[in-house]
Image (tube, rainbow, N blue to C red; front, side, top):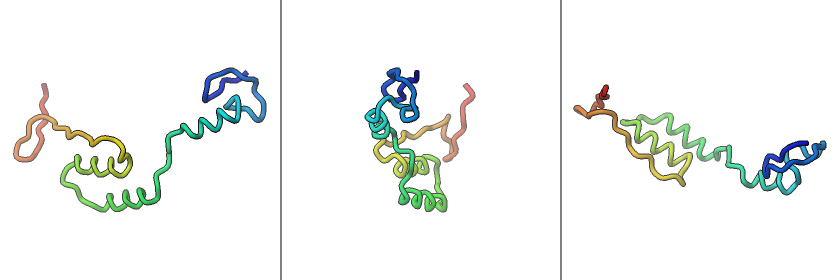
Length: 93
């Protein structure tokens, strides 16, 4: 017996049913899967991003977010410790 990777039901294993109990579960699993590939245009943008110089890490993170996950909200800026003359000095509290 096997367990369906999509719905979790038990089913007899055969050569045609190794991970999913029915072809419908296999199709639904493919439709629900998150995209694991990056578009070619995004890859080109990443290569141009590697050539640029950034003044802060936050601007780099925001540009990466806009390329990879534009549907997500902006990343909040993180400050570490106190700022002195444009340099962050971490606190050891």
